[in-house]
Length: 94
Length: 365
Image (cartoon, rainbow over all chains, first blue to last red; front, side, top):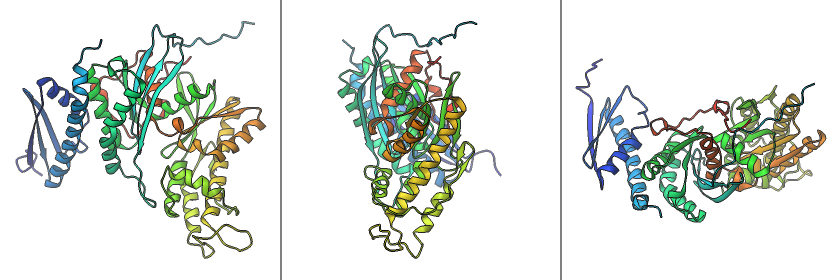
């Protein structure tokens, strides 16, 4: 069984945010939960200015679909949360 | 002979008012609530909003759709909770969320929102044990001093008593929870899940006239429920079973109402027995019933009969607090926070299994 991931599947998703701060928040929020199958799914989350770059290396195509799908569902929730509360959060309390 | 030392509560009176936002989503209820601990030490519920993921009759809720429901409703419910509390998120001292136990994907959906809010507003996070949330809300709403707690819901069935900074589990289900047993039976007889299946079983049971024999399975301090569920389901295959008939003792028939009645009577009697055993063990006179099944009035009545025979009383809360909600998470979370316990974001995971006695109850003597 090859250990080098050369025959694994790689999917990269780039998610832009309004600011570098928001991107850093999204990374910090999403990286907390471990992948459910760490032996078959490798994840990397990198902040490039205001873009969150997520790279998934998976053993099977099926795992690639499930992992990217779950990631997108979670990122979408974080984006919506920042969208709804971000402006109010930046407001200085009186 | 030295005088009996009165234990001083380690929780000091707050120097000012404290506010906490609580977020709950371990099962199919998505709840958010804001609680205030006043400077005089009292707890005030400022808001308690909940939205339930309802499935059609005959179907239970599954993790994927439940998580989807929570993702869809979380922001609305939280926004409403903060608005109804009449404060701003900036006034909140800590953001409390359910760490576990419960269903994985739904728990994580809520945790993601909690973490995001924590980072946006720079507020500390507090991970809360769902069971401890129920207990703390029950204590503060009813004022029960040191009761034996019967925690019964769709996901958990435990008999708990407090001792030395832990909520100790005296007895519990060996397999499925009481609420799970009732919910799954409701599916077999196609009862509506609105507002929740247990409520419809309770109403149906009132029309039952026949007490059918079902296996009564207490095992010492514990109970086992999967056998009773199988036996109840087996009656629906009995040749006497009439799914649409009215209950009557004139004909030898079995109706859904009879089965609901028999199931409730048997299961609740078992719960009363193990609760009584715990009360006898620690010499307590108070019973606090928490969890969704606690809203069942027949269970409260049966427990009340047992308690008064022992010279005690039963405490119970109404549906706002015994069914999963966000305010109980806020209450337990704020108590932790006031004792200096918070959850760093890198540790703000969720876990499907989280024993009630794993929590260090720092806020009690």
